[in-house]
Image (cartoon, rainbow, N blue to C red; front, side):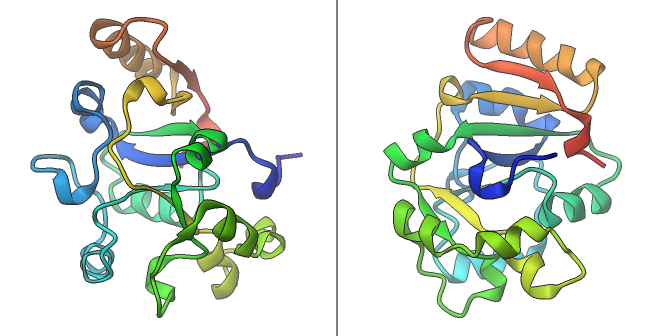
Length: 192
């Protein structure tokens, strides 16, 4: 049985494989500080995030394969995706903020502190992962927000959809950062 979202140890950021070299060279940067990248987010969400002052954060989710991840992969089925992960303890130590559900479903998008936000998430509903239920769907897209650029040396693991992409990620990692920078592993269950 899968680990419940509350008991998980990681947070997850989905990105296009095409962004990886830049991320490894420059870090995982907030949208407001990026110039050229393979953008896969919906325009409505981007606009809302900008209006709410959220584009200066780097967003993560509490589990991979949530409704956002699925929608992005369906919309961009021609692209290859990977998941960048961090330990939750790192997020807590670095004072990440939390939105307790998807920002489009919140009237007040004021991020909470890590501990306050973590305690405020409705983990029981999130654990259902019933994406046909609107409330559950929105809670499953709760966000953990980094206020700063993240060094790739702080990644725990990059999860890939298959061995071919895994090998390409390893090759890039080794060339740019060295083989001990972070783990790389196939986890096809996270991908469509």
